[in-house]
Image 1: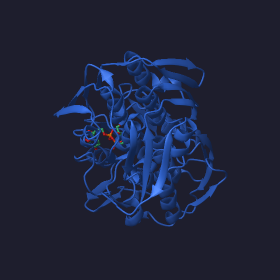
Image 2 (image 1 turned 120 degrees about the vertical axis):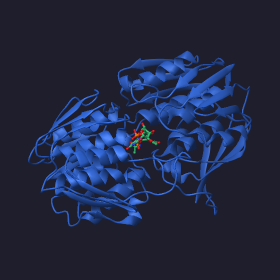
Image 3 (image 1 turned 90 degrees about the horizontal axis):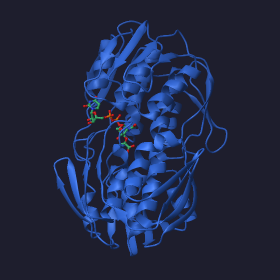
Image 4 (image 1 turned 45 degrees about the horizontal axis):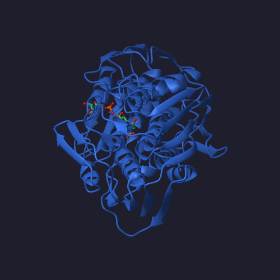
Amino acid sequence: MTKYIVQGGHPLFGEVRISGAKNAAVAIIPAALLVDGVCRIENIPQISDVTALLKILEQLGANVRFLNRSDVEIDCRHIATTQVSQELAHKIRASYYLIGALLGRFGEAEVSMPGGCNFGGVRPIDQHVKGFAAMGAEVREGDFICAKASGDRMKGANVYLDVVSVGATMNIMMAAALADGTTVIENAAKEPHIVDLANFLNSMGANIKGAGTDTIRIFGVDKLHGGTYAIIPDQIEAGTYMAAVAACGGQVLVRGIIPKHMDCITAKLQEMGVQVEEQDDTLLVRRSGKLRRTNVKTLPYPGFPTDMQPQITVALCLAEGTSMVTEGVWDNRYRYVGELTRMGAQIRVEGRSAVIEGVDHLTAASVQAYDLRAGAAMVIAALAAEGTSEVSNVHYIERGYEDIIGKLRNLGAQIDSVECDETIETRQIG
Ligand code: EPU
């Protein structure tokens, strides 16, 4: 096991380059299963979720070849099985995308689902299943999800999602790309990674219209061909570095982003007194004075992202006055709050809201990452706190942040990764 040792209390200065988006990559890699040809995927983030997914594809019979550290060639012309090994699927939450992709290409899939609780609550996939069933598949749920199309192919259908779900929108899009007929997804999610998946599939010959709006139409085609596609930059990774500057102070140029994707985060940080200047594909983020209080409610895109909730909470802990954060996507995403209060934060959780009384400073402590984004928040808190903190269970963080140690050190942070013995808890998230 690895933990991070952080000597905090210093502002951040310098430049950080943002990697490819994790939540796009974990959908686009399974989507390569739909392609009867070689696809070259560029700007893949080097994170453990990606490594696990590529390994799964190899086990299914794909040929996977890295061309350099961020570009990979995937050839799914000779897939040997539609059964995904339990051992690997358990490692990542996004293994559910393998169901839509395998169903779409081969009309059947058997994928074991990640177990355990997440964010302290359940993460249902009923909307994914509802979509597959509408398209003619029979789906049996247990330790494994076994899904089988009624004929050789999925059938186009109308699916109205009861909740706006990123996963269900992408999974149904994959299952529909090669279906017989047209599929319409209503009340679809609109996150940048939804558009990225549609663009990837379209560049391989799919016919998908409306991604990024509430209604997505997928006109089934007979076959997808190979091609080249570059994944968008990671909105949440960029937002995490912006929140780190807010909490620690300093001046950082965040490079390689799509500014439009950052608007929801930029606007909130500006309300808090952080200066953000946009230029082409960069944001210059600066904070010198005291942070101001604000309220944040997480919502599906284009609202403030739930995956930035723990990180902005850390910054609000250091703002003047009382702030309120309300979680509008997940039932429970506040397990990390106890760790922050041990660092001197004053936070009271009431249902889906956290009421934060700003404090002057945080104090160093040994804290653990409860999940990916909570882990990033712990790193930010440790960077802002005076003294030496330890963050354990960092394998969660490494599932979604490429080279976080190297990137932070480049900004002057005093952070080291050391080996240790203890494992506190092992769960799936992301
Ligand atoms: N929901 C249902 N039924 C479903 C699916 C979702 O009730 O069938 C509910 C969920 O319980 C939740 C809401 O709908 O309350 C939204 O869930 P969604 O399906 O959008 O989440 P997801 O696809 O499982 C992805 C990201 C999460 C991110 C959410 C919301 C991946 C691999 N994960 O999860 O990312 O929080 O969308 O934006 O793309 C992270 O990166 O740290 C992370 C957790």
